[in-house]
Length: 151
Image (tube, rainbow, N blue to C red; front, side, top):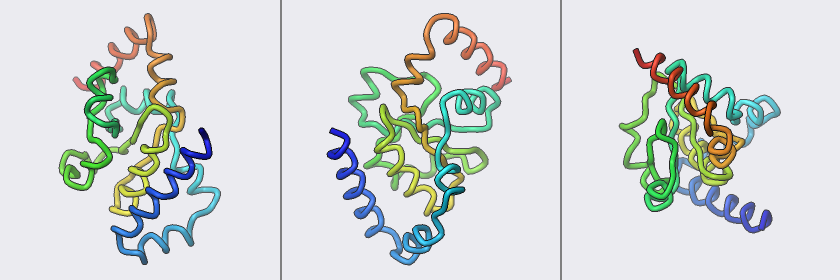
């Protein structure tokens, strides 16, 4: 299964690269280093803190059907295949965090947005871990803090 996901990721990355200026993607690849590898990811706890402080925007890039079945109430659903036509919904003044259940599509979205000039990271823990964490008291506390950040 991991090999299939990796293969899909590589194919999608190549497809994205073909649609962008190849020189931009090549420049990004040539400058890719350990710091960029670290900077491209965000863990769940840091993401939740940034959302509470109104410093980030969470973009759930799953298909509408997936989002409709379950989602975090603090995310915006912009499916990966709709992202190029919905860039106006992103807040350029905030860190954009892309997310999906595992992180394959989230990273594809991250690459696309990075090359478009956005400050973007992907949720390396995936939405499944976030949903597992945000239960009971954790959910209540997070929503209270999130509401305070919006005041």
